[in-house]
Image 1 (cartoon, one colour):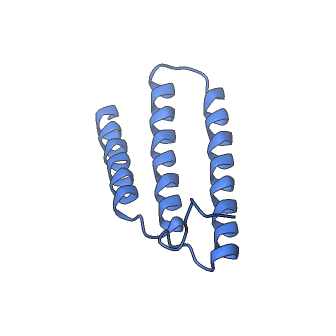
Image 2 (tube, rainbow, N blue to C red):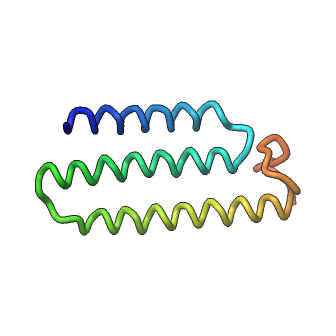
Length: 98
């Protein structure tokens, strides 16, 4: 049973990495694939903690940091849409002169 769960989580992680590398046109699609990666890592953490009969306190810390990461990504998305009008990476230049 654990091997099947690990296979599914590994498949989730690889598909999340693949979608992150292939869908680089929009910031929103990259953020969604990053959240999918975080979700697969969270499942892996829960299975690891259940298998070795550890406490689940670290999972709450992990969820807190993942929520902060998601909020930061959405704030960057909102500021990018307000300043540039879209979330395309082609219209966003990091090396702009002020």
